Amino acid sequence: MLVLLFHLGNNRYAVKCERVREISPMVNLQPLPHAPDCFAGLFHYRGLVIPVVDLGSLIHGKACQRRLSTRIIVVDYARGENFPPMVGMLAEKVIEAKRKSEDSFVPTRVHIDDAPFLSRVMMERNDAIHLLDLELLPASLSFLEDMQDPAEDALNI
Image 1 (spheres, rainbow, N blue to C red):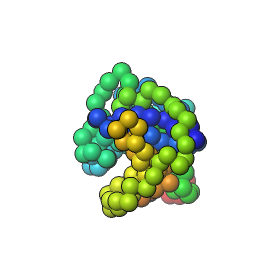
Image 2: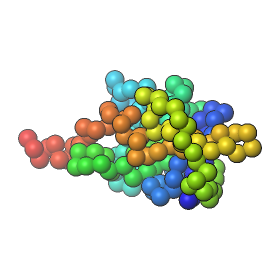
Image 3: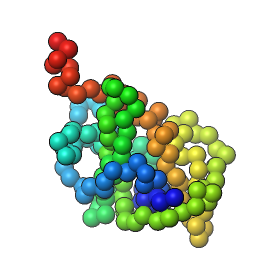
Image 4: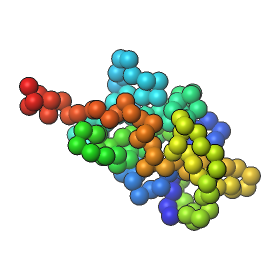
């Protein structure tokens, strides 16, 4: 399988490329008042306004550092009618995609309630690469579940 590799601090992560739509350079994000800490802001992407989640804040409690290699990974997210079609994920050192065997990622055998999306890992030269499961990520982003297109809201008045 083809995976996109990135860092959050000193830790390495991967995400399957099958749901990655694009890797965008870092842009100014528009914040929302009262949003959770892991919500980095909104950005205009190909005619859509999409939410961006700071993976550093979500996973480690520390926002991603702004580097030249910090990127927004745009992934397909649609889970139903009232969900955003895509989500941006802010990550550091987004620099390569590699082929890895599906079998090389093994279960961690550790269940973490706040991070069920981190259930598989592979070891490479004494370094762990955690596979971020995009199917399980939405459970940790419940604040996105009720986002609707404002144009649809105007029609429902």
